[in-house]
Structure formats: structure tokens, C-alpha cells
Image 1 (cartoon, rainbow, N blue to C red):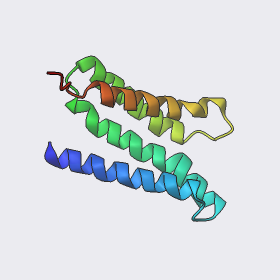
Image 2: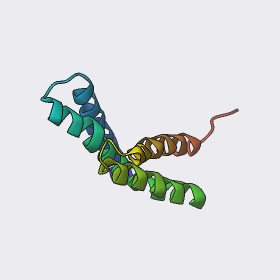
Image 3: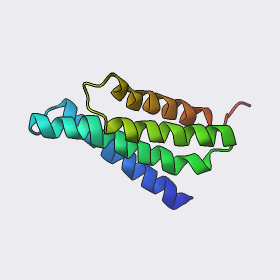
Length: 107
């Protein structure tokens, strides 16, 4: 479990570096697009896939697998396709599922 969280953390940091590289144009336009519009979503999708088994609710677990699939599959669609936006839907769904699985600390 601890190793899985470490792997997820590393993937998330690398994904954010890819996103930042694309936003701040550190490389050529082609490399920036590849990093921020493809590699970012693939890494986040892998992170969601690793997180899915740790979700307590089975419905959330299956939804997280779906969010991961949307991120990864959507990353490979050409950007001019309208359906390429499914990667963003997957990202938002995965973030919502991640936060909904957090334990509440009400006292």
C-alpha cells in the first residue's frame, strides 16, 4: 500500500512537470503539445488505475477504472476530434472520485 502511494505520488509529480513544461513552452511546440496534451493524461490515467483498488466503495472503484480509461484513451485521439475531450472528463471524474473517497474528519 505504501509503495503504491509512493508510485502514485511520483506519477502525479511527473505529470505536473509535463503539464508545466507544455504551459511554459520549455521545448519546441511539438514536444510541448506531446507533454501537456498526451503524456500528462496518460500518466494521470495510470495513477487513477493504481488508485482504483484502494477505493472503499466498489462502485467508486469501477468508476475510477473508467476515469483512468477515459484519460488514457482520450490522450491518443487527434486533438481536432470533438471526442478528444473525453480525457478531460476522465480527469475531472478521477479527481472527484479521489476527493469523495477521503475519510471525513468531523468531530
